Amino acid sequence: SAAEKGGYDYFMLKEIAEQPKAVADTLLGRIDGSGSLTLDEVRIPPGVLREIDKVVIVACGTAFHAGMIAKYAIEHWTRLPCEVELASEFRYRDPILDAQTLVIAISQSGETMDTLMALRHAREQGSKVLAICNTNGSTIPRESDAVLYTHAGPEVAVASTKAFLTQLVACYLVALYLGQVRGTKWGDEIRAVIRDLSSIAGAVDQVLGTMEPVRELARTLASKKTVLFLGRHVGYPVALEGALKLKELAYMHAEGFAAGELKHGPIALIEEDLPVVVVVPSPRGRSVLHDKIVSNIQEIRARGARTIVIAEEGDEAVVPYADHLVRIPATPTLLQPLVATVPLQVFACELATARGNEVDQPRNLAKSVTVE
Ligand code: AGP
Image (cartoon, rainbow, N blue to C red):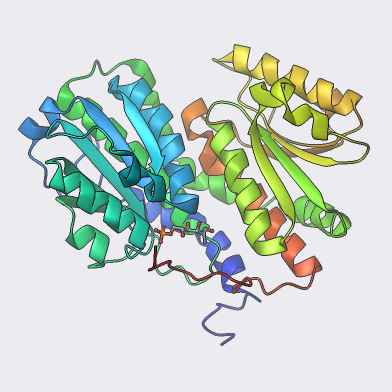
């Protein structure tokens, strides 16, 4: 009913708008005043976590993209090797797992059969499994050694939005917690990340307030056949997520690429007026990444692409090459997905509407996939 949708036309719009609160709720009570993480709910003894020598993340769809981003954070902050794998591929290749492996299963519903089967397989090999889940008491947390709940609230629309942002928050918390428990050197960078994480809900809110031009742009692209998405570093999984949203909602051909792969094949796809969304890393800090993507944007534009550039406020280097420029607030590199994903969600939702598609219930899809 209209009341359930809180005055929005679709649950998806409501859930996109709820993201600042979902993010804040997922952080609530988990970072104390001194900037330490208090994740007592992760009932894996610190002694066990100190013995871990590898992290393996399993998930499907959007949750898999959250896992891909988590890998960058976990490896950078903890120096533990981290693998991410589609749950449906994982157990069929005889993965190397033992008691020193921490497996993280990410699932909004907690009922995804592929993810459940992957974690069962991991536990049979003696690995500890931590679930990151949005649904209290669902099967995946019940069968795991521990659970860190995302506090997104119920997500009704088939296309995952607020659950994704909270999965990212939960992954960052786990990464920082592992670092804390294992005594990884707690430098200024980590302190800054914790500070920025505490104010990130405000940044998400700020992005939501500037989405009208993105909606207008989406409407003008309603008759396009293909949209490509490019990113580097954590912007690469964001590009994959943008493409997935567009496939499932707009039924358009969409692909996400690592920008560095362009010249290894995908650049052959570029033709006159093809919309290409580019997620640009912050020009501060890791400026090598930034410079590389600016040349990627030049390369595709020279071949006729219509560039839709998502870049941090104050990033002037992209301006000459952006046919459309979407500004996002400055964040530390690893946290950028929390703000950069939002315009892609809005873009896909508006394109779906413009094409007359059923936004909350896309064809052929179910909210949770309980079969293999
Ligand atoms: C996302 O928009 C999708 N509908 C889908 O990829 C989903 O993320 C995937 O099926 C995993 O679901 P889960 O988080 O409930 O396990």
